[in-house]
Image (cartoon, one colour):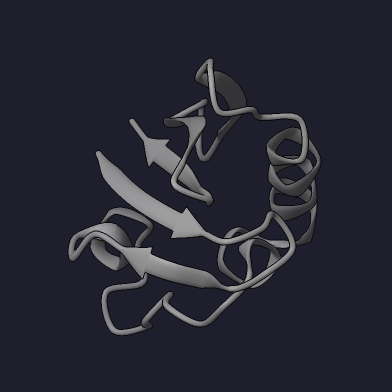
Length: 88
């Protein structure tokens, strides 16, 4: 799995676990500073942004399944003002 942190759903990624680019098949492309649409593509990025806008501080939420044959599930929660996205 991998972890991403954003201040807001449409903003840029502030933190990404070291393995994130490898997991997504972009080993030589950094994801920090990019938004979800540029990292995951327009359709998946937009779906993630919409879902993240409804995540609150109290309950983790399913965000989206993406990748070849549903390879990844994205779950999210909020912590200290950040949207935390876990890719499993």
